[in-house]
Amino acid sequence: MSIVEFVPQKPIDPIFAIKLPPTVNKICDFLENEEIEDVLKASLKISSKRLVALKVVEDLKGNKGRILIIYDYKYKKRKPKISIPHNQNGFFDFKIYEIDFNKDIDLEKFIISEKEYGEKVYWE
Image (cartoon, rainbow, N blue to C red; front, top):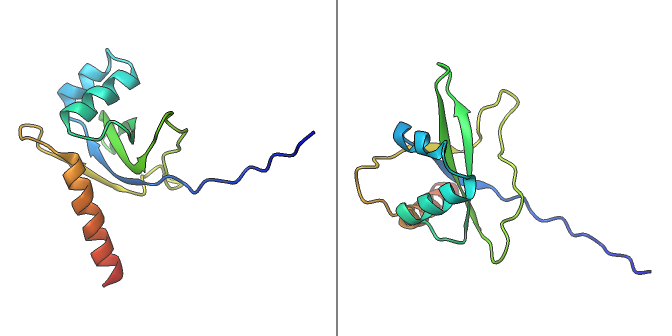
């Protein structure tokens, strides 16, 4: 019998999330999560291999909605299991943006600029 040693993988942290508009949120009620992710990746110009997650959320006023969480990780074959980090009060530990869905959106470019900004602020 052989012994297998599992090496723990470092946690996959989100870069940021995007609040989905109410119309998109209603459409999401009729689709499976994988279908929604594929449509959002194509329409928001996110790499097809980038790890994303959808989360149903509720604001302080009790309004329900969804956010699209974007991770700094690209998978090759299978999407890994993830957890969505939050503090003990249920608040998320990453930025959540509201974007104008009436404009042409390229989130891969935004991800690059977000990383560069984070590195500048961190190192300076």
